[in-house]
Length: 209
Image (tube, rainbow, N blue to C red; front, side, top):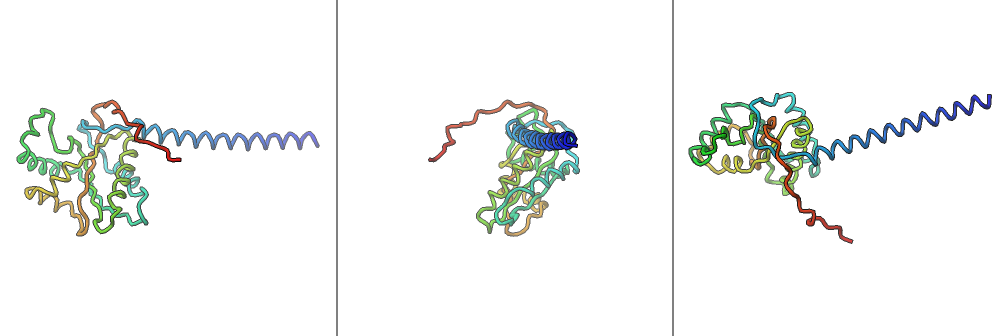
């Protein structure tokens, strides 16, 4: 009986140890997966014609709105455009004011030829809203990369939409509420390039004792 109890205790300990080991391994795998996504991410400026379907985009958007944000104000407004008429239409307006853009033989639209664009506006009444919107965008960018979807943050198109009278029609279509301003946009699509990593300056990091 004593032997049986000892074996049972030993078996129980081994089982518990195995479970703890599995949990640790699982946690490490998750940690490594996140780090791998962050370190391998690249800004993509060439995309395949294939559009990102809305179900996939919905997952990406849900990741975005789960970003940390001040006082849970969620001080953002998000507009997703995958309508070729909108993208091509505003691009035509852009081309008229920026004819040099068409000198690039690969130029198709002002969003790096991406088929899906997410526009992000911030609440101007909250002084930390731009930070919140940045965190929102980073969540979307990383989740997209983990699913094989490339992205590129774009400030120029947002600036054009908010400053060019000729683009006012398209800005209005985004239906951004009063008190919010268009801050930036993100292009989404399947990468048609594999850009190399650009160097980062680690000297900008300092530990203060």
